[in-house]
Amino acid sequence: MKVVILAGGFGTRISEESEFRPKPMVEIGGKPILWHIMQWYSHFGHHEFILCAGYKQHIIKEYFASYALYNSDVTFDFQGDTPIRIHTNSSEPWKVTVVDTGYETLTGARIKKIRPYVEDSPFFLTYGDGLSNVDLDKLLAFHEKHGRLCTITATRPESRFGYLEMDGDMVTDFREKSREDVGYINCGFMVMEPGVFDYIHGNVSLEQEPMRALTAARQIMAYRHEGFWACMDTLRDKKRLEKIWETGNAPWKAKER
Image 1: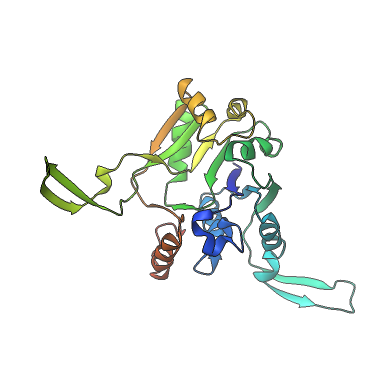
Image 2: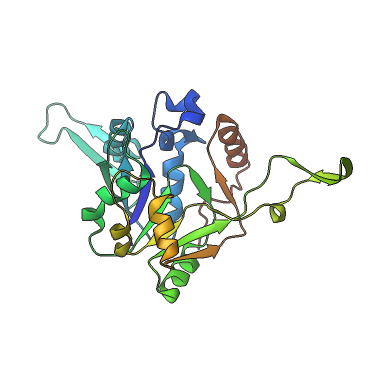
């Protein structure tokens, strides 16, 4: 199944990095977070990607244009008939389509613009800044079973703040807030049917009018994920993900199946 990744936003809350590159190209462990996301989908056998690019989209195109060269042994023969020869291609079996969906386009309109590339087939959809160990086989099976147009993955994020219990103005308990104290959010890792395109009109955010209309039509189901999920929204998030990756046991790191 094709995988659509939203990779065109500005990333204003991590401007220390996104000033120079698109947010999905900010690196974790020497690799763009986009690469980490693609590795997870590829681990489940999904190798065809459509990237909704926009801000500094040329950087994404240049990265994949040189990807095989960077990951292979290469001979440069400046006098031969074949000036560049790749010997051992150790790159992934990916097919990547980078679509320039516009500089200030909102997420819903970005998705509408890639319709010709997914044609009339269902597709995965996720954000270019979120990492997870969601079981994509189970997610897809859940989607196919309920028969609605859209499945979102719902998770409860970790809270950064402590939890106060109070009786009037008197503090009665102070503790770390657990995930059970936080409501579910849409963390991406969605599955969409082509019928979703009919709910997107104009330059709109997917999370606003289209999602509300789909909800009103009872066309969205939620797959609950209680495992790892993290969003690289700020420089603090990036540093945290770097530390997790350095342990060698990052939850989103694909392992042998």
